[in-house]
Image (cartoon, rainbow, N blue to C red; front, side, top):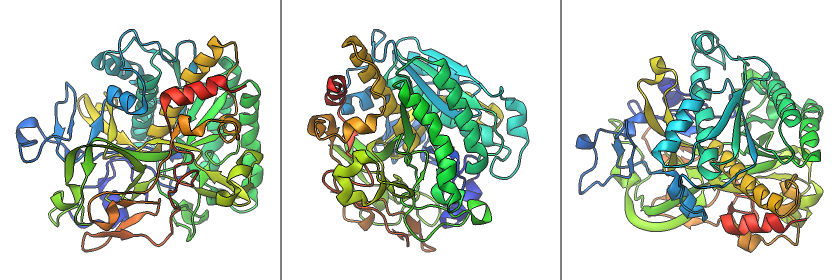
Length: 517
């Protein structure tokens, strides 16, 4: 179900949560095709220091100044913690990662405070001055009316939700490749349903392909359920959109897209895309064979989840320590599937695209159709990344930090790491990698050194602690979670339909792409 920023009451109803249970502040769903694919930890998980951590309940996340609030249940990461986990050197003022490269991030509306916020993010974490610009190639956004008017899926706070997405994209592309030229492309669409909003995205991407240098890396943190386009018309619609990607690939650009935050769930075209289909489904544009699909993992670094009961929230809405229990220490990476909020990595097999030639080596997994994702990266909310915001204070309040996850977090970070690889390729006298999929599926590609294979993990003794697929969980009237009716796809050794080839190991990934012809 759709979990939108500022719609806590609706969210609780969509999730079937018990009365008083705090819901996720913002996520995406296939019920709003074409919307952002980010998820924000609920504010109710954070408290002032005096009311938060104790010796018996240590802090799991501390927000930087000027915020300072802590959580004892939700974990969060700084840039250096994520960089260390994936094998990048610490972020400093002299870090040169991404120098000479361009990263384009595409979002509806953009963010009115993206430039100031990424500058504050950079100074907080002691990185170099960001090289950032915001552009509006098909019309500048009027942020006042964008948040004050509108109805339906756009809604009166649609621009606020997209601003959180844009800030996440910008700040975490910067966190990985801080010397890259980062471009936020905003579109002024008020309606973000796939069949209406997607052409605007593609027009903006076409403009960016023509404007920015060869080897530009694009990240798209939005998606539309294949079924939202309706039957046979989907193939013709997608073919038109794919012409944009082909133009970019011809100049060695690379395209990434989030695989989605709803597991294997998808939506039908009927009833404004509010009805889920009864079979596993995937979304566009990540399913395009000309795009690299980025799925989600949960990084547990310095902590290990230890659930003993599948009831995330007590009847009064407080967090149940039997579900949220964790121990200090440990380092693991599992498929992203958070039962407490019914969110997890998208993945599966296309009903529109046949299997591209580069996936012949994984035909035993994908069958005769395009399978996604291709790669993965941390996307968890419990284990999310810190994002700073000052936008829309009438909605958001004073300047603060949020904790974000979703495959919106995954895609810009893998894009940024690929920009680092392109910088290495440039130093070797080569062009941008272009169609990344053709490289990573190749029999000669050193996947063992380039990727960490994600396999099933078991945490604690509760059933939802077995992270083995992307089947979504549902919350019953008694507050307990249980697997939903639509089956998920298994997370296995080697390529799978939840995490692809796995998550990149920075050094091996960059080296492998540098060596690719």
